Length: 283
Length: 198
View 1 (tube, rainbow over the protein chains, first blue to last red):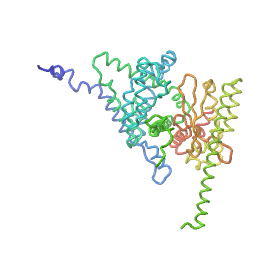
View 2: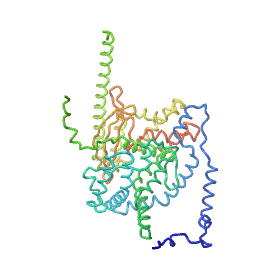
View 3: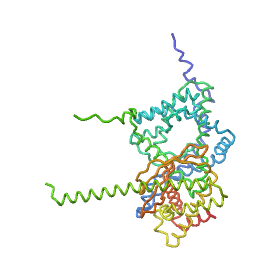
C-alpha cells in the first residue's frame, strides 16, 4: 500500500507564498529590534576603583539593562492599554467561583508538565502530589473545576523546567526582560520553551478546533496570571521609585524562594506512621 | 591523655555552647510570642470598631512600637547611608517612616476579615524568622515570615518576607537603582520621597 505522503510534502511555493513573503512584513520590526539592541547596548559598569559600586553592579547582574528597560517600557505600555484593563474587567465582571473554576481548570491542564518536572527534579513526594491532584481533580473535581485534592491534603506547588535546571545546578544567568513574557533569565526562558515542548497538549491533534482551544487556553492563562498579580503590580507601579528595578528584585527573590522550597521538600516516601515506630533494638 | 585543663576547657566551651543554645531557644520563644501578640493586636485594630482615622492612629502606634524603623531605613539605603550627612540621614529616616506608615495604613480596608495561623520559627537573616500563614477573604493563603531581632530583650521586626520576597531587600534594590541613576545623590532620593508622601 502506498502511504499518503504526497499531501504533507510542501508543494512548490506559489509566488505569493515564497519564503520572502513571511519575512517581508516582519522585516520592519526585526530591523527595529536589532537597531534598538545596538543603540541600547550594554550597561556601563562603574569605575573599577569604586569597589562597593562594582560589587553592586555584579550583584544586580543585569548587563543588558538598557535593552531590558526598553522592553520593560514596551511591555508596560501594552499592559496599561491592554492586558491590565482586560484583567480588571475579568476580575470585576466574573463571579468569584467562576474565576476560581477557570483558574483550577487551567492549573489542572498544566499538571503533566509539573509532573514531568517533579520527576526530573527527583522529588517523588512532589510528583505524587501532582499526580494525585491530577487524577482526583480531573474525576471528582469535574475536569478540574473544583480543587478537591487540596481539601484532601494534596497541596499545589509550582514546578517548571527552569526549577528543574536549577535543581541540576544550572545558574540563572544575567537578568532578562523579555518582550511579552516579562522578567526572566536564560535559565527560566529556556525552561519556558522546554515546558511548552513537554506539554502533551502542544502535540495533541491538529485542526482548527484544537488550535482554537489551545489559543483560548493560552489567552485565559495570561489573563488569569495577570489577575493574580493585579494588586501587587499596581502597588509596585505606585510606590516604587524605579518599578523596573523593583520587579527585577521581586522576580529573583520569588524564583529563588520557589527553587529553595522544592529543594527543601524532602518528605519521606514511606507513610509517616512508620516513623513513629520504635527503632529495632540493636543486638 | 586529657589533662585537667583541657577537660576544664571542654566543660567551659560546652557550657558556653549550651547557654548559647538555651539563649537561642529563649529568643525563638520570645520572637514567636511577640509576633503572635502583634498580629493579634493588628487584627483587633483592623477588624475592630472605630473610624478609619482612629484605626490609622492605632496602627501607627503599633508599627512604631514593634518595628525597628530606623534600622530598616538604614538597611534600605545600603552603601549610600555613609554618603549622606547627619541631617540627610535624619530627614531620610523620618520620610522613610512616613512612607512605611502610608503603606501600612493606606490599605486598612483591604485587610478586614484577615486571619492568621502561626508556623515554625528559626534563626535567619540576622534575626529569628517566625513563619505565619495569613489568609484574606477571597484570596489564597500567603506565607509571611516575620524577621524579629531580639537584641537587648525588646524584640523588634526588622523585615517581613511575603511568599519569599523580602520587603527590605526589595526596597533597597529600588532605592539603589534610583540612586544609581542620580549619581548616588541622597538629596534627590529625599526629594522623591517628599513627593511620594505629600
